[in-house]
Length: 371
Image 1 (cartoon, rainbow, N blue to C red):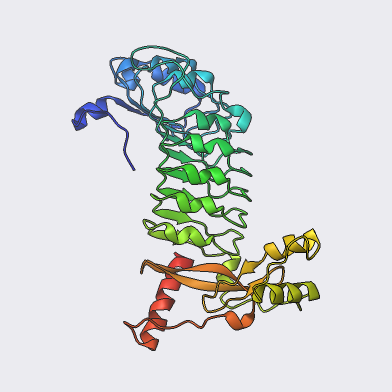
Image 2: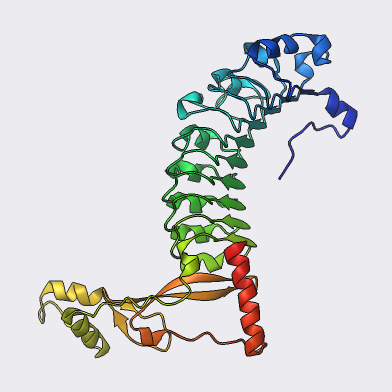
């Protein structure tokens, strides 16, 4: 992750442009006193400051004089008791804003996170923000204002009570990291698959039961954290993510589904007749059978076993198959078969013996499921 600090490479220069008031037990009044005192701040003027660290204090709000820091790039407000972010914070030329572990709700945020000022360095209707951390607050839904931040690279919203991801998240085309772990998300929006620059997607410790097929479009994704969810299977196209090097699936129902689901109900007469008709190669039309039966026959699904020419309609066998993922690990995918006889036994590769293959498979399986 990039570190957004002063452009100067001189350490002394960076220190002179930083005020560190972290862990000083300050409230708003005492903070304002410190900021207004050149002797305490040890700086020439507020215009010299680029980094302001106010973490681990007793702040419930922000002093109005914060607007005087016209060149501030990094503001750390983490671990306070802040209940409201003023609109004025949007007028600062911030690159990094950290407000994790506070008491913010959705109504605590400005209605717009874009600047309304105009000037050479800060145009109206834009934002210089590249990192925003709102983790560990009391947000109940995805803050829609965040989707305005088209230059944002790192977004942290973990440890809240968010139940869904904004459908407009596709607008955030600069995102590299999207962290939403520890929320109440049950469904992942299809639009997440449009984040072409995304490298890390953190969705662990939620209520997710399935992932959209669009996840397979995240070609730059390197890390996908899905542990502690309700996933029963993964989309089969996930194997297309060739850059994925970290996949965490532990504590999901799919982890215990290593054997086929044999709870197969007896097929109906309609199912059996439909399979026979399709196997015979006949294609009856509306003039031969009722239109509803024609539609039913056209809804047939092919068995995924390449050695089977059969089809199924409503009656199917669910089976978990581990697919080798570029030699990195094995991914458990759900496949549908027309019969339990179509389940193919695992075979060792030519390059390894049976015992070595089993040992290797076990290692790769543990890596993907427990990593």
